[in-house]
Image (cartoon, rainbow, N blue to C red; front, side, top):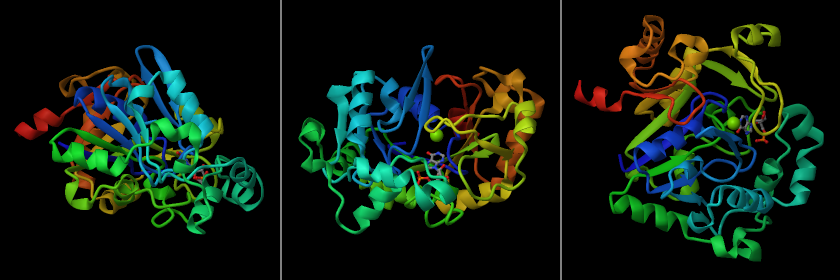
Length: 338
Ligand code: IMP
Ligand code: MG
């Protein structure tokens, strides 16, 4: 699968970071390019007993030879970016496109008050105000910042070259389908489209170069911030079910609801999914914790997965069975045979 795009089919926080980390290792991915809005995202990767929270770098850093790129559509906060490069020790293999727009302190200030903070309940990361400046053509770009100079690379050229050489490439989406400015629950959404086509555009890859689109769902649904959430549970009920989560980036409580088939079906359509992944299977079915073989998972869990497959009409190729990168049931080889 030379070029695979991975996006979330709900409201973000479905485990894209974990799945990207897994795929990069498993498929020996040569290049991962991060798409999406910017540091409003928080991707969590648990690998070899350590927990990493990423807001700028691709989650594929766990694969030691993988190039880690940030596409021109993505907003960069230089401080967060440089800290992550430093903490992860990834300097030699990180690239930022010169055309990435830069989040400045004034954007963060504007995002922490007024309409965006109070009504939309934005992440306060400065992403919305920076994208607004970008639309007005007054945002500064990465090429203007000396402290980013050593990281600047033509990301679309590098990604497309790798694809043309037949290497495995991952495009890492952020946020989720229903946070899209175009397809989400407007005005309770983020500041641009974040579906698969937009993720490709963010990194400069055309639709004809994409081989697979993986849409990630969680076994239940969560969202942070304002906006509708069908079937929303009380925090107490979410706690009882083990669905009570705290947001990676903002530390806010995530609102929780059961798996939403209507949203999932539409997400498959909007993203052109060729595969679906369901994470946190172990939260609904604790007996599945840490399993990696489909044969070993319980009858109840299989029925849940097969119902998703039947309703969405897309193969569920991978299941998350725990927070660790390698806690995955990977059915891709078996499904190909049958
Ligand atoms: P903004 O993207 O910071 O403007 O926030 C707009 C809305 O999108 C708020 O409801 C945020 O909580 C939500 N949001 C933005 N990025 C993410 C994400 O990566 N995961 C989950 N929610 C997000
Ligand atoms: Mg997240």
